[in-house]
Image (cartoon, rainbow, N blue to C red):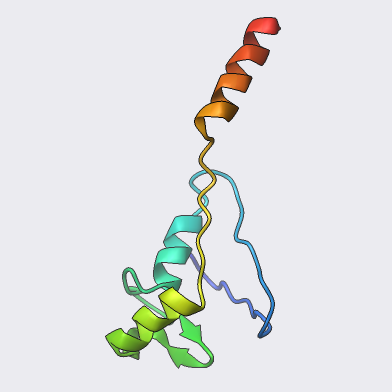
Length: 88
């Protein structure tokens, strides 16, 4: 459960949401991108509650303003890690 989280992002800047596995990063992102709505409280972008935003505006925001970079190791990285483990 997320309680009392507030942050502001200045226009024209980029920020990353990082943390341990299971910390809620994907949940926060899902709320921010309106993949689902908050059960309580509000998620606001430019002062507007995203739950009240019309679908075309949400789609435009996802397309034009937000980016998601998953950090999944690629096959080459996994192969190198296995080599290092074997080497000891």
